[in-house]
Amino acid sequence: MSAINLLFLGSSLLDLLRHWIDAIEIHNHNLAEFLCKIIPARCPFERNIQLFSHTVWHIPPLCKLNPLYEQLVGLRYRSLSYLADVCGEDVTRYCQ
Image 1 (tube, one colour):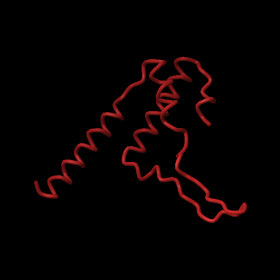
Image 2: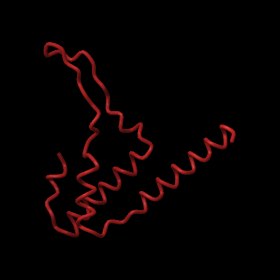
Image 3: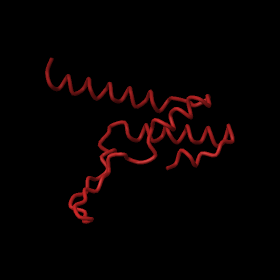
Image 4: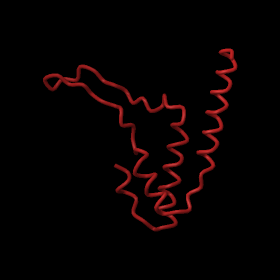
Protein backbone atom coordinates (compact mmCIF):
# COMPACT_ATOMS: atom_id res chain seq x y z
CA MET A 1 0.00 0.00 0.00
CA SER A 2 1.43 3.38 -0.91
CA ALA A 3 2.18 6.08 1.63
CA ILE A 4 -0.52 8.34 0.16
CA ASN A 5 -3.16 5.63 0.61
CA LEU A 6 -2.07 5.04 4.22
CA LEU A 7 -2.19 8.77 4.91
CA PHE A 8 -5.69 9.02 3.45
CA LEU A 9 -6.84 5.97 5.41
CA GLY A 10 -5.48 7.40 8.67
CA SER A 11 -7.07 10.77 7.97
CA SER A 12 -10.46 9.27 7.16
CA LEU A 13 -10.38 7.05 10.27
CA LEU A 14 -9.52 10.09 12.37
CA ASP A 15 -12.41 12.03 10.82
CA LEU A 16 -14.78 9.14 11.56
CA LEU A 17 -13.62 9.08 15.17
CA ARG A 18 -14.07 12.85 15.47
CA HIS A 19 -17.62 12.65 14.11
CA TRP A 20 -18.41 9.72 16.40
CA ILE A 21 -17.25 11.62 19.51
CA ASP A 22 -19.13 14.75 18.42
CA ALA A 23 -22.31 12.68 17.98
CA ILE A 24 -22.27 11.29 21.53
CA GLU A 25 -25.28 12.60 23.43
CA ILE A 26 -25.31 12.57 27.20
CA HIS A 27 -28.53 11.20 28.72
CA ASN A 28 -27.16 9.32 31.72
CA HIS A 29 -25.91 10.73 35.03
CA ASN A 30 -23.32 7.97 35.54
CA LEU A 31 -21.87 8.41 32.05
CA ALA A 32 -21.68 12.19 32.45
CA GLU A 33 -19.99 11.86 35.83
CA PHE A 34 -17.53 9.28 34.46
CA LEU A 35 -16.59 11.48 31.50
CA CYS A 36 -16.07 14.51 33.74
CA LYS A 37 -13.74 12.46 35.90
CA ILE A 38 -11.61 10.96 33.11
CA ILE A 39 -11.35 14.00 30.80
CA PRO A 40 -9.17 16.53 32.63
CA ALA A 41 -10.32 20.13 33.11
CA ARG A 42 -6.92 21.41 32.04
CA CYS A 43 -3.94 20.02 30.21
CA PRO A 44 -2.07 17.69 32.59
CA PHE A 45 1.24 17.91 30.72
CA GLU A 46 2.19 21.54 31.41
CA ARG A 47 5.11 21.70 33.84
CA ASN A 48 7.75 24.09 35.15
CA ILE A 49 11.12 22.50 35.88
CA GLN A 50 12.71 24.37 38.76
CA LEU A 51 16.22 24.38 40.17
CA PHE A 52 16.82 26.25 43.42
CA SER A 53 13.39 27.92 43.11
CA HIS A 54 14.16 29.28 39.64
CA THR A 55 12.32 28.04 36.59
CA VAL A 56 14.92 26.60 34.24
CA TRP A 57 12.57 25.01 31.75
CA HIS A 58 8.89 25.32 30.91
CA ILE A 59 7.08 22.46 29.21
CA PRO A 60 4.08 24.00 27.44
CA PRO A 61 0.68 22.33 27.38
CA LEU A 62 0.76 19.77 24.60
CA CYS A 63 -2.94 18.94 24.55
CA LYS A 64 -3.59 20.87 21.35
CA LEU A 65 -1.29 18.42 19.57
CA ASN A 66 -3.88 15.73 20.29
CA PRO A 67 -5.98 15.39 17.10
CA LEU A 68 -9.10 14.71 19.22
CA TYR A 69 -8.57 17.57 21.69
CA GLU A 70 -11.51 19.73 20.54
CA GLN A 71 -13.89 16.76 20.49
CA LEU A 72 -12.89 15.63 24.00
CA VAL A 73 -13.26 19.15 25.39
CA GLY A 74 -16.68 19.37 23.76
CA LEU A 75 -17.69 16.00 25.21
CA ARG A 76 -16.60 17.10 28.68
CA TYR A 77 -18.56 20.35 28.29
CA ARG A 78 -21.69 18.46 27.24
CA SER A 79 -21.28 16.19 30.27
CA LEU A 80 -20.89 19.16 32.62
CA SER A 81 -23.92 20.85 31.06
CA TYR A 82 -26.01 17.71 31.51
CA LEU A 83 -25.02 17.40 35.16
CA ALA A 84 -25.72 21.08 35.85
CA ASP A 85 -28.84 21.67 33.74
CA VAL A 86 -30.66 18.34 33.80
CA CYS A 87 -29.49 16.82 37.08
CA GLY A 88 -29.18 20.11 38.98
CA GLU A 89 -25.78 19.04 40.31
CA ASP A 90 -23.09 21.45 41.47
CA VAL A 91 -20.28 20.88 38.97
CA THR A 92 -17.59 22.96 40.67
CA ARG A 93 -15.93 19.78 41.95
CA TYR A 94 -15.18 18.81 38.34
CA CYS A 95 -13.66 22.20 37.47
CA GLN A 96 -10.38 21.97 39.36
